[in-house]
Figure 1 (cartoon, rainbow, N blue to C red):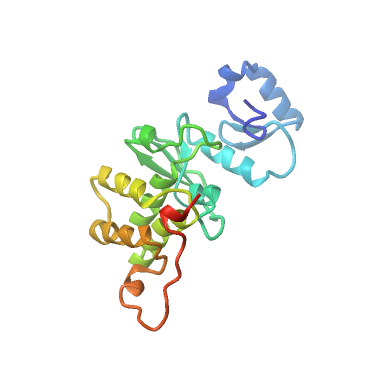
Figure 2 (tube, rainbow, N blue to C red; figure 1 turned 30 degrees about the horizontal axis):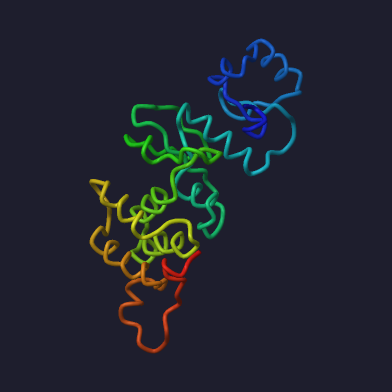
Length: 212
């Protein structure tokens, strides 16, 4: 488990790892291991790589927590750049102390939103895109979050539409639903621009039928 998690583990994982808590304490005191957050350790010294940083944040959030929002988009390759803050989603009833550098969101539908195989654990592409569209400051930003993963072949407008329908609350629901039809046709311009552009051809990505 420790190797799979880039050398990172939480105290609540100790039983599954069959690690003696006393041995953990001794290695921390000797400087062979390092404490990252309360209850989270690295089984090595020195700087952490990005993946190790993400593992540390997600295990700090507790069992079944997953990386989400900008951080999940970063991992899937449709964020413009790594987020300065690490975004994690935990179970609705799970509460932990705030940790600098980590934003913890809570969800009552974490089982449906989490990807079953990806590591570090994260939300599915469709859930991530809809989460970010819902929280976007402008509609054009929201359109960008739903169009980019489609253009990269990570998901489809149909799957995004299904996730949107499963949400009881979503900002710009009507506009995004209409915009998904344009995405299906290959339009990747901000929707407000694409619907009135006349001077130049819109930037397009391959239509779903043209993709391998």
